[in-house]
Length: 343
Image 1 (tube, one colour):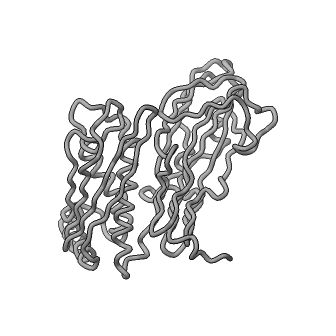
Image 2: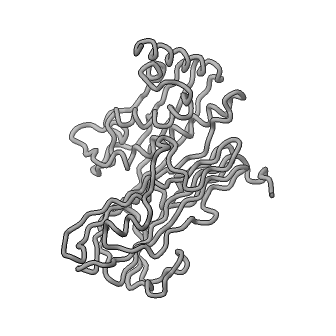
Image 3: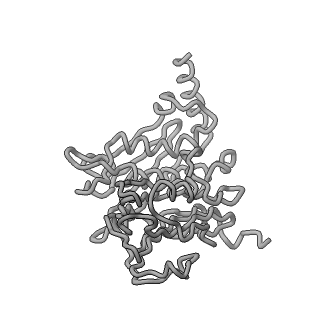
């Protein structure tokens, strides 16, 4: 049974590739840090029933833990390939056999030991996943039969945050926020992207209610809302993202420590559109010192204080009078916005 399923998937994926015109498609994204910018470059070539992903010209490995091992990069490619190109097949080794990958050793996508890789899954893996979706969408757009599978980028950054603090009873607590799992859908060839639509590769992802977060950690949401017009414009727009702001609350220490993981999509949006579609909004991680929480701000424009915007990952303390604000990115658009139905 297992061998037959593998053989079946192999036949189906090769048949699908043969239905698509041969060609080469390119995409590039950047990983921002305060002192420099790293590049991940992908060239996909489809020839007959074989598909090659080539990461030559990607930046060299770095001293941060954002590097990928070869197999992490391989997995990130298939995180986009499976749902886009093999959505109606059994996902197994049969699909792997028609795919090749070139990932030069000593780069961000194939780090040489002892390079750190502990944050690969929320680091370079996200860029690889985005790039694979972009080149696959370009490839599918060249085929009338499969054009409707193309999509703008979904939830491109997976920007995590973690909090540490003390409860009202003096108990030390740590908290992993699930806001990032709200995600956003990229626009499709036939419809707008899904607002806070999760991840393309993980349709079962869920973001907990604000009340659940507040029950498990001594902080309070000032607001948690959809960001208007945050999806990338296009004939079909990308799904909108959300933003939120939190403050210390019901804590013996009246403060908490925030471990923040920005560094992608802050300066340049990563939720790229496709076929003339625009990118979604960029991400943001901002601390408002001596903020106006007592005025109950309800969005970024109404949140005030001494503003500190964070570009790279790091740790910061949010005191009794401070506000921590985070915005995720909207989905990429599809097609020229001028072709959008005004109704």
